[in-house]
Image (cartoon, rainbow, N blue to C red):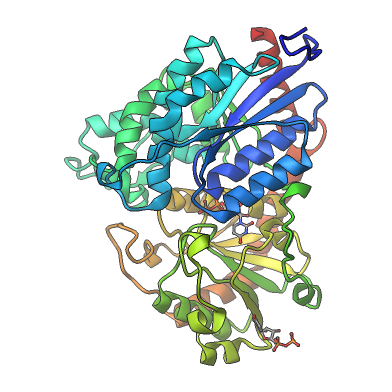
Length: 475
Ligand code: UDP
Ligand code: UDP
């Protein structure tokens, strides 16, 4: 019997989850939590940061907690950071740093957990500050990596890359990581080519500590990322890597259904597989010029489309209507050809809708996973961060196509910055995406593999079982 009087059998695990900033990090933690909660022998504590940057984060957390009242919720109140001390003006990056600097507050929260914890699963951006806390409490320590296994190989290899001068003294345009097909230098997230960026500093400190983890959990699966999963688990990438648990593909859960509804009536009226869904995730705003070209391109493609417009990086700051952002003239052209909205939509609901056949995506890793799960082919249009590395996965797996010459988002900081991709070209590529029969079949095949991985006895459940077995052994 625990100190609180709760009965807990020796066959029960209690996992604390600690995500960092942004929906791209929060969603995989909530889905992983929901996967654990489907099992009778798992308890979950969710540690959230307060305040959050976006409204979507606080809303999703509330929805999760209402759906699972058995979850213990702990809040870590952030110590504000002076932006002048962080080499970035991105609100999500500032938040990452604030969480790192507040991580010492975690100790008292964890030590009072009842029943006692079996493991702490936390964000990849928190390794160095959190590891000593977990070690001092003799708590097994796992990271839930929110990106691709290919990106994880780069993160693991980062100290070697940094020691070799960030590739700057090397004329080879390809980064050669053992066991991984070469990564073009142009695909590396631009901040990680700059030794002084916040993320380079975080990785220089954190990557050498990966070997102190008990394991890494990742939302990926064989069939989407066979090469990288095998290379990492085979110890080819770096010596001393902890075990990698491929617990993907993460499915969406009922708690994610928004209070406001996604306009599905329009989709219901469209023929099967005829609609291309266009969205750049939760935190990427296109420039007004680029928004116009996307709209013109979609109209020119002649395809039916469902387009989610985002004008501001942080949802709380969205203050203009569709007519202001897209323009009345373009809205008129769109009428009858497609649907455009400017709101949070339930993306899984859209991608799983029978009318949706293609996805123009920035390739945030959650979006790639969702496209794979539903076998929807992707036109990759990476905008920043790890998204080109994910686009390589999309292309190599056959899930979709990628027009490399489109480069990074304007202001995205890449070598090939500030191109506004023209509507004609967008229209042509959208037609290619929607017209390609072999592409459709290949994406559908990945969807089949993803579904098999998710079934009882599939790789996701088996891997989850192995993870829980490990926690029970170390109790
Ligand atoms: N998402 C959604 N509705 C939206 C925008 C985003 O449901 O209107 C979800 C999307 O399905 C994914 C997550 O938010 O699960 C975004 O994560 P991703 O890694 O794709 O990209 P990020 O937003 O982090 O750039
Ligand atoms: N439309 C849109 N976004 C909006 C409003 C309208 O894309 O926010 C487009 C869409 O193609 C829709 C068409 O305009 O099918 C007609 O919409 P409207 O509201 O004028 O008429 P409804 O069909 O809803 O009666």
